[in-house]
Image (tube, rainbow, N blue to C red):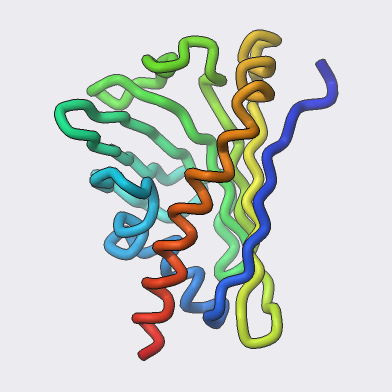
Length: 164
């Protein structure tokens, strides 16, 4: 399959680009909005190409573990990473809730000035995925916006507080 499905969300935040970048790259701030309605624990965050972000989303007794490997880091302009579900030892594995979910998703986030605010574009694309994984991703795309939207609403509030 040559045409991969791509999920894109565009959002303008009422904050300068340096502050929005910080909210995406400071683990203490990131943990407050990434993964809304769950407890987010960042076990490691090494912001450089090849660096790892080890993330846990705790929902009661259950945890969802993810490993992100940064592929691009361009200060205040662009972040890209390969995003994968993992087991308890941070080994890439199939998603336990959706076995056909892509083992790797390429996430790209861009940051641009937009008046006094910052335009952010987030893109998700299956990476080196099987036909079944691509179909699973495409079938689930409609629901992605609500999760990112909830996280971005929290981020809006955090950015407002950080500018007071």
